[in-house]
Length: 74
Image 1: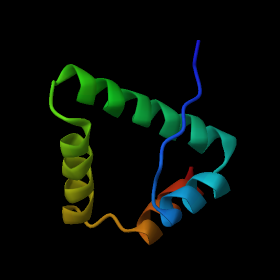
Image 2: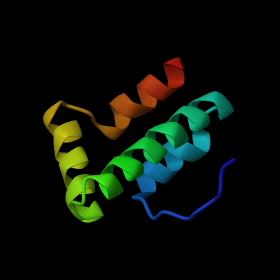
Image 3: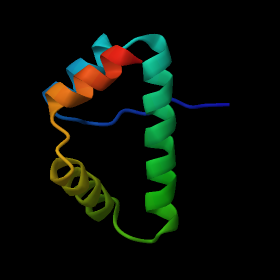
Image 4: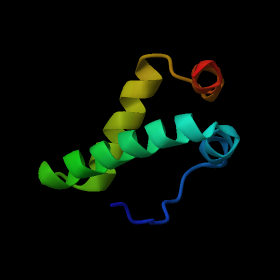
């Protein structure tokens, strides 16, 4: 069972999600679910976890264009 929530993201992320296939959206939803669960179980503030995820993605070279390319391949 799932429940819908609203999460604010930057415009590029929102566009990538909107343009993704249903299959890719489901995968992204699972990923978000796992990250939110991890954030709440780790007792670290969610903001800190999200900043760390963002920093790691940028450090590894993930750009909006690369993310879109990955989603297009799925």
